[in-house]
Structure formats: C-alpha cells, structure tokens
Picture 1 (tube, chains in turn purple, brown):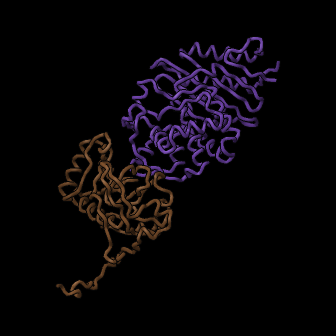
Picture 2 (tube, rainbow over the protein chains, first blue to last red; picture 1 turned 180 degrees about the vertical axis):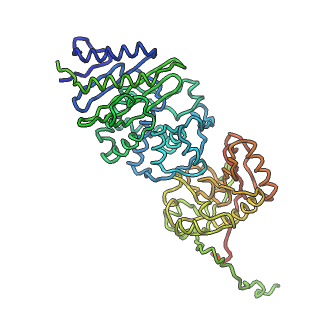
Picture 3 (spheres, rainbow over the protein chains, first blue to last red; picture 1 turned 120 degrees about the horizontal axis):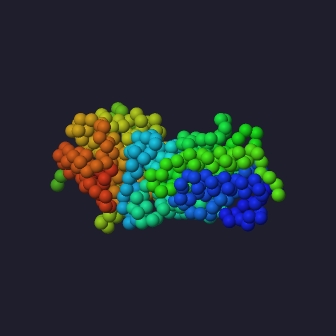
Length: 296
Length: 210
C-alpha cells in the first residue's frame, strides 16, 4: 500500500522511491534559491499522498481565489445568488484597516474586461470566471463584496476545509498588507479543497463540475502544466506577488485518474526562476506517478 | 365666497403618446412590494430628519418596455433602473416600480447633457433604488427617483477630483437647485462618480385622488 507521508515522517516509513522523490524536490529547492517550498499531492489513481512541508503557512497571493470561488458557489447553492445574478462593477473597496477606501490598479489585472465594465454590471459567473482564469483582482473584490469574507470562512468550516486557509481580506488591500494582515494558506489546506472539488463533493457534482470548468479555463500555464505532456489537462490556480509564487490544481492525464497537486514557494523579491521551479517540481512528480509508487 | 364651480377640473390631456406606463398607488401593491418599497412611509435621512417616501409609482411591465420608453430625448427608462443583487428580490424582477418623480430627474439630466454636449452615463445602482436596497442605509433621494450617480461623461470617467469637480460645477450652473456630492472619500462624499439630486421630491400625478 502506498504510504501517507507527513511533513517530518519517520524515515523508516518512506519507501526508497518515495524517499528519492523527496530528495529530488529538496534538490530542486536548494538549486532554485527559494526561501521555502511546500508540496502537497494526492493521487486518485493510487491513493498516494505526499506532504512536503504541507502545513507551512504562506502568503496566499491569488490562490486565495479558490476558497473565494467556493464561497461564491456556496451562495449559489444556498439560493442567495444565481450564476446570472448581476453585480455592480465598481472600483472602490474598503480596507480592513479602518475602512479606508482603496482601488484595484487596472495595470495589475491581466484582463481588462472587468475594468472595462466599471459603472455597469457583470454576472456572478462572469466575475468568477475572470477571478480564476486571468486572476482578476477587481472581480475577486467585487465577488467578495457581495458574499462577504465571513460567509466564505463559514462555508469552509461547514465543508471541513477551513484548516490551512485564512481568508482575512480582499486583494490589493495595501494598508492591510503593511500591517501584516494577509490571506494565508498551507499546501495541505489548498489540497483538501481541490480534492473535494475534483471528487465532485463541493455542494453537488454539478456545482463542483462548474467550478472545475472555471479552473480548467486558467490562462497562466507556466507552472504546473508547463512541462507536462501535450494533451494533459490541468484545472488550476496560480498566485504570485513579490515574495511568493504558487500553483495549485488537478492534473488529468490520459487513461488514469487525476492527481491533485499544490506547490507553494517563497522567495526574496526580484529572484528569478519561480515558474521554472514550480514546473520542475510538477514534472518530477509526474514522472514519479506515471512510473508508479513502490509498495513497502 | 368663491363659486365652487370655479374649482372644477378643466378637462385636459396628460397621456403622452410614447409613455404607456400605468400609475399605481404603492399602498395597493401586494405585501412583498409594499415591504420593499415602503410607500408613503417615513424614513430618516443621515441627519435624523424624517422624510416621506414616495407613494405613487410607474409600473414597468418588462425590460423590453424599459429599453424602449424615452423619459427624455437621450435617456431611456432602463438607464434609471439598473440595480444589482443588493436590491430587494421582488424589485429585481418585472413588473418593476419607479417613483413618478423619475421623469423630473430625466428632464434635468437631459438639460445637463445639453450643457456637457455628450453622453451622460448613469451607473448601476445609481438611478432609482428602493429603501430596501443594501446600499440604502438612510433616506437618500435615490429612493425617491430623484438622484443619479454618473460615472462617465463622454469618454471621461468621473473617478478623480478634477473630472468630478468640473462636471459638478456645470451641473450646478445648469440646474438651479441641484445638489451635488462633494469630492472625497469619507461618508457623504464621492470619489468615483458624480452624485446629483433634486432632493426629496414627491410627484403625485394629477389623476390621483386618494
């Protein structure tokens, strides 16, 4: 049987190939210059799990948008929102620090669609799509404004996926950032959410599928998918700020069940090679899984 | 003493050929609408001063009709009734109801449009919104149908002091008695739109006798 490996597992429980996998990840980490790397993996084909510093906390960057997506669909599931419910697109938000107003910089959003709709309305499902596929910060804060952080956190709790996720504010709240009030995640925390989504257990198989469809639309593919074979489908969400670069998703290879993979990395500002490092870890794990873990 | 006969109504015409909306007394609407619209009720403004909410509304049967009905040469009805998920659920589906004073606002905006010489865009949630709208903390002329939040004029987005103050001045020069919200971030100010309103105007159509 494949063994579940903890963050600091007794070495006697690690089979040789699994140990080799950890060593490979450690080698990539050392060569990359990253300050920290965490990896969480669950393979639905074999049941194999890897938790490499899986409980270490990182600034979530845009990976926090996966829990927010879950919160939006919880509101849909409750009937509070419909996918086609309309939301006023307005670029004005209140910081969690003294309710001081702030705006999302249009230059930081890769997609101008949401900014172009300022003053008008967009549908909840459109905002969810832009929040994930092009990581629109404006769409994220608009959705969070309608749903509320407390409601998202309550959803995570009810679904028993709150461990390893700390949603404390919207994105681009610079005042909060300066005060150290940040959204935080662990690799294990994101892994639990993605497992639930990939298994169709978030509210209903239909709603889970809709969320997975959105994650499949991801347009930033320099991380987990970059070195996987052509034809591999990856439903994922990236996240990057000056000090972290992450990717978390579900990998669908032909003729096997998917695996869920979360790679979180922390860096000194201005360090290069972040995506390359994530892609290298993803490729290492891919090679490990297609060869099959060795039983004890 | 005056001759009572001198007070008799002179027969007149008030049916606009392109304005087919029915006037309804809000007090006769089904309970879910009365709860959301609060017709004729008192509602306090931000200073605690009580204001009386509109009682008479135009009934809008469909989005199609809102898209076709002109309130002024350059303003269609739909532009005044765009609300998002924060509006009370019964008021997000048709028939919809807008206070009768909405026509006065449209005429004012038309005059403002003439002064600026280009398109004037009212934002979502920036025309009529009910007292049950989640943005409506205190009485606001938006719930009287006499306020508009303008987020764009021509190609100019009103998201900075210069643009807001420039068009605010034009509005006040053009529309005597109009009130515009000053530029700024605190409550009561505006930094990403031009708010202008006519105050708490109640419009009672001539045919209403109750």
